[in-house]
Every structure is written in structure tokens, then in C-alpha cells.
Amino acid sequence: MALIGANELKRKLLIAVEGQPYLVLDVFFASPTARGGATMVRTRLRHVLTNAVMEKSFRSSEKFEEPDIETVPASFLYNDAEGCHFMDEKSFEQFVFSNENVGTDRGYLKDGVSLQVLKYNGEPVSLQLPQYVELTVTSTELGLRGDTAAGGATKQATLETGLVVRVPLFIKEGEVVRVSTQTGEVAGRA
Image (cartoon, rainbow, N blue to C red; front, top):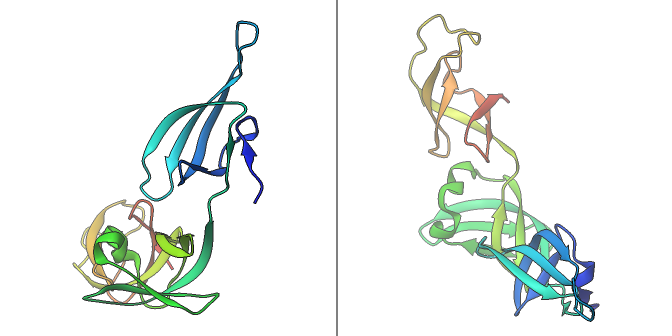
């Protein structure tokens, strides 16, 4: 495995610092003012597993290993008391994330949805949801005030996964809507 020198760092590069995987967010090279001084590389790093951000300086002569991280496609299978069950679409292995690890992302997971799983040293560590998911409206209030899209008014709706969102007045039960996994807002009918 080739080592990466501190002077070769750039944004979005994955490196191992003290045995932990980090993503480089920013890099700034500080040239020395005195003779014989070593160039310093100041960085902002985000821990891949915990998402904690830190700032750290390195000498230009320091070297880093590439962490054993890969992103693989996976499918959501089902949820039970043990947690959320997924299948790696490459190896067809099944694995489980606890309900605490999945957290609020559970509302975007329905049977068969495809997503990306981040694996560190061969073990699944985090989920990367698609930008949008399509979910069916299971219950909603009756729309009043003309049922128009131009009015901008919304009502509360419960989706098939239990997620509660705001939808335009014209959306009825049984319709499929596109929901943004970043904001939790409805982007329209599917």
C-alpha cells in the first residue's frame, strides 16, 4: 500500500491518522519564514466513523496510509427487534444495524430500497441514503382551501414507513411522493 505524503494532501482524500480514518475537508500550506524551517500543512479533518471535525497541522515530510474503506451497494430487507437488516448487493451477505445506529433515517427505509454502505476494515459502519426515496401516503387530512398546488398551503401526512411530513393540499391517501432524505421535505409526486 502506497503512503501519501502530507504535501500531497488534497480535499476529499481519505487518510489514516493514528490508526483512525479521516476525510480531508481543507488543506492550507504554510511556508516557513526563516531559513531551514519546514513547510507546515494545516488541515481540517472529519472522522469517518464519528463525523467529528478537527484541525491538525503536519510537517510536509509526514506520511499517511490509506484507510481500508469502501462504499458498497446494499438493500434494506426488514426491521425487527434486533434492528434494521440489510444485504450487501455484491457479496449477498446480510448484516444488521441497531435501531439506535440507524436513528431517524429509519423513516426513509422501506423494503427493497437501495442505498450505499460504508465499510471500514470489511465491517459495515454507516449508511448513505439515496437523495430521494419514494413513499406511499397512508393517511392524511382532507385538503381544504381549494386543493390547489399554487396556494402553497400544506397539510400533515403519514407515510408507509411511519414518517410524518408536510404535503401539498392536493395529495391524497394512496399516492406516492418523493421525499428528500437530507431535508425531510416532499419534492412532489413520484
